[in-house]
Length: 429
Image 1: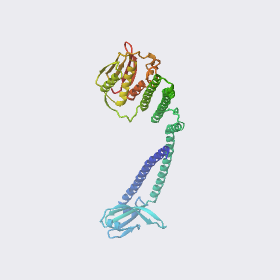
Image 2 (image 1 turned 60 degrees about the vertical axis):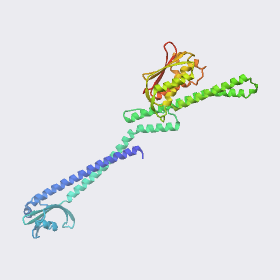
Image 3 (image 1 turned 45 degrees about the horizontal axis):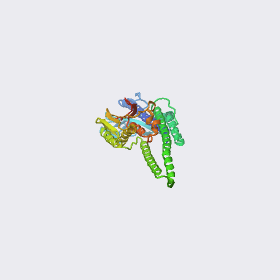
Image 4 (image 1 turned 30 degrees about the horizontal axis):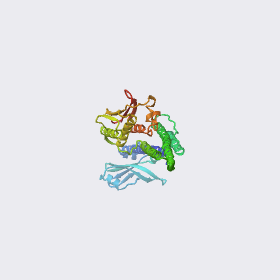
């Protein structure tokens, strides 16, 4: 069952319930009022029944029967039962009731009776209320027709309103189906009007834009990764082909080829590791824990000292606690230190600080050109001066991925006196 049909049925059902309740209420209120009026007339008539018998009562259309305490009857012969005789005998109070009687022509008529006690017996005053039942039947028919018409009108109005209201939803559905069929997230839906459905359309377009951007990033990532992997693979293949003719090579040449193969294998390993790290992105399944950031940075600095024994690493670290994925934060910090170590000359100093929740790594190398300070965080980007250095161009890109995954930022600056200064800030540090 479609949403439009459900809304139409709901509107019709609500109106049906309301109109039915109103109609029933009106019917019984009118019935009560009509009976109350008849009962008032009968009660007034019953106060002087003998005047009616003499033809002096204004209620000349009523039927009157007098019932003596001994059961004697006078007046029009109305149906008399034990309850009426009990009133005449004084053993029960008077009452009103509906009754039926045979007319002179043999037809059955509906009567409304007032049985009231009088001196020496009881009086039964009756009135033909066929007209009243006829009026109530006509009222009932009118109310049924009004209810049916109201339900029909509500259903029609509900269908029209739901059609207009759900038009944006239909557009969203059609757009989603086209995107599923064509796999092209460039589809957009028009954003018109105001309200929740308009915001839904805007959110849907935002989602499509994010999806389009993600797919484009993925395609670019795959293309760049393929290009970067092709270079070391080609080099390794060439070296292997040369080694196949090793009997023609000098021992020194073979040793250089083996060194090249080992270096290229390390580059492949680092490249694949970087690709896997980037592919993880902001994985929601990674558990965030409380991380003592100063201890993590101190451990990374000790590791850098072992990796670059010819450099002097100075660390000034304030106690800092964050909520994050420890392994990813650790990888980002290490990449900053590794980048500084790669560009520093032997005997120089790398200054590492953690203050105000910000990690700063400053080296005394050649620095980063102003027009390259933003691009160094792009995937696979390598400055012209860096192409002679080992690396995949993914280290700083991973730092930015980690920073953004933790709601933070990373930036590169020219350090005072020369060299590069890289700053990493995590949002909750």
